Amino acid sequence: MKNIIALIILLGLTTSLSAAEGKKEKWFGVGVKPDPHFTIPFLGVKAPLPTACAGKDVSASFDFKCSKSGVTFKLPYFKFDWEFPGVSLGRGDKKVTIGKK
Image (cartoon, rainbow, N blue to C red):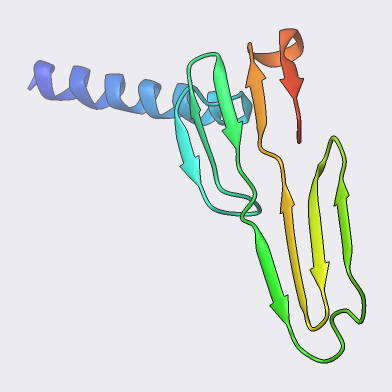
């Protein structure tokens, strides 16, 4: 009986401590919203999906733009847009991010 009570108390403390740590940065993670991303210790990667549009109102001319944030390519009736991925190294306040945050 004492073992059961000790186990219940231990589970309660563990649950309350893990709920309190929920606000901290996670060590591991994978997600798709708002951008596809994955996280492992001290490394995080966000890779936005490229977009392609076709139709009469999309574009009426030729255009190509390449900047440090991404690439845009337009043809008549077609547009392709891709933002470069972002990489984060470190944790918390000591994090360095290259690309999209």
